[in-house]
Amino acid sequence: MTLRVSNFANHGSGLSSLPNISKQIARSWHWLCWMAFGFIAVVLSGCVPSLDDLGAASHDIPPKLLASMQAKGMKPESPILIRIFKMESELEVWKVDSTGKYALLKAYPMCRWSGKLGPKTKTGDRQAPEGFYRVSMGGLNPKSQFYLSFNLGYPNRLEAARGYSGEALMVHGACSSSGCFALTDQGVGEIYAVVEKALRGGQPAFQVQAFPFRMTPQNLAAHRDDPNFAFWKNLKEGYDIFDVRRREPKVAACSGKYVFDAEFKDGDPSNPLAACPERIDQSDPAVVAKSSADEKKYQELAAKDFTPLAYQDGGMHPSFRALLKENGDVKLAEKVSVIKYPISRPVAALADPFDGKE
Image (cartoon, rainbow, N blue to C red; front, side):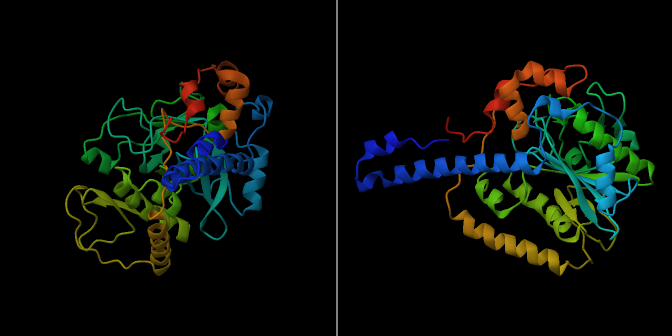
């Protein structure tokens, strides 16, 4: 975004205009940062510069990915874990390596998700879920309308206790979303193959962690006035455990929130809304240190002025947005879906995210 120099010129040199000038600079700087993030995201995710580079959809683990597993000390049947980030429009696949810890296998650009940042609470709200979920073999659908898919298991125990409604919230192919995460047929084909291999290799179920954004102090500070902020801080507790320890956090629920790596005196609580019973576990010093450092940084940033990103209807990874802008929604749909399923709300896909002011 270019700075509107004419706006500055009209203010003259009066001191009373300085707050307006500062706001204009802040908004422009915010957009420059977002554009830079988009560029970096396209580069780091190995994203495609043209439709032809997307390749064909397949239900097999490609040789290149198998080679990457071997180079990283992973086996095709070793356990997996998935993390999803809405704002960044990325899905990460992690696998246990030779050290026994999880390591990142690959990050996949997300073609479409719907709604806004925040959890799904009711049927028809177009929100994609945020929270912690478990997917077993029964959640996989090899005959999905959207090529291949797996069900996240929304609502989970906590969400059901809160009265949240909705069903069949999926990770699937194509580039259309009404509460799901669409990875294109090519993307979900790879992911599904890796997931299925791990489950058939003995993993009973894998964990999916769905976040509004990467849980950094900067992102939290930018969204500190959001009504979901307390919920997001709760999600960050599980995020921090995985970030530090590189293992799947144990998830329970009580007092109406998630509780991680908790050992309770009388066993896990049965009612997610009841008060948490007595805990007998001890906190991990490394996790506490990270959380404390992040909180200190957050407090410093919270004093600054941020403009959180807004959405008309969900997001699209910058790489797919570039393809949509260059080729149009019909051609993109033809390439990312074997049944040529239409791109959902392509106008919003090109507009989002925005700064909420336009």
